[in-house]
Length: 424
Ligand SMILES: *Cc1c(COP(=O)(O)O)cnc(C)c1O
Image (cartoon, rainbow, N blue to C red; front, side, top):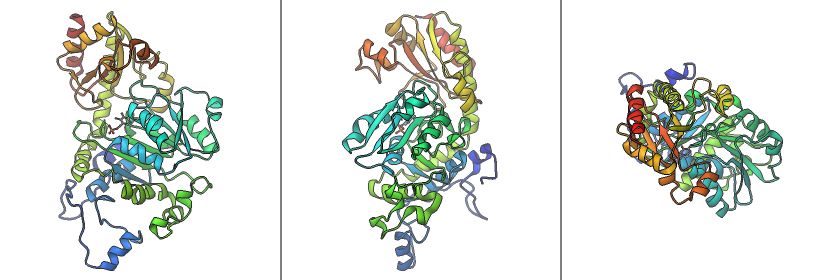
């Protein structure tokens, strides 16, 4: 399928029905698979043969979305997980253990920030957080002997900052470590991190890839480009006792990382998605290219409108000229960034909440990045335990509204904002 363009891959990659087979990806709602020879099953367990044998390790419906998203990102393989959090967790545990260190962007998704800042340290993995716009020399200085990975978001949730992916990749590679990029907000339609040197991509598929807020999921995609034989990754380049001494880099070559994530970590940790969720994701992916284009078109118009409104203090949308990250957006996602924007309502917390309560079309939801327009006031919800002072430090002022622009008619979205602003 990779000979086709990305729009075609959204619709068809990963599933090629043969004569008389279902046109639509079947939901294989089965935990297990029948075999007629015990010897063959033994070979499956020893990884000597390819095939499904237990859904925790692989399922034909999940296989379709894994192949499709690998094609969209340009990778050699992918692993579908039960959530985005599971994908981020496995992406690190696959190459780090107690005593190791990672470097991560400080504006990454709150769940990932907690994972790296609180939970992984309990397992002995330490994180140094760095600013999205860190200078090359300063980034260099953060590396230690035991640094094993660099993790950034191509477009951060919710601050919408864009790191210099090429610079991060260059510095990571100079230290013999891979760059992992969470590409959830940009999606492979707007940004393909492998083209800028990233080695591993992760996603929360719960956002635009699914697109309809129907199923949690995550995915890890392997570029196949990183050399794991540099002495830093014995888990990949020395025998695994749990598979009769298999050496992943010898046996699986460029797919060593993604194979280990599946056969070792998914086997042992079991963060497996259900086949029905894979099916829902496959349907969502079929329109990804159309939806993302419309999300960006609508968000650009909403951002423009807000930037001229006298009740709005500021607007943050990196596709808009004058934004701090506009140059990075032009370099890494010139066709668009995402449908999420944030803005400040004049009058602070009270005005922001008042505005939100008067919206009719835009619903108050914690979720972002799906077809329906949604709005959230972080100061009174996700970040409500913080004081105004602490909110300012976190870059989330009490006046901040996070607005996830959907794919409805943009005139209706703007009219809804207008009537709500009139009432405050
Ligand atoms: C939502 C999100 C996650 C976590 O994904 P879940 O599917 O909710 O577990 C990770 N990264 C980013 C950028 C997200 O927006």
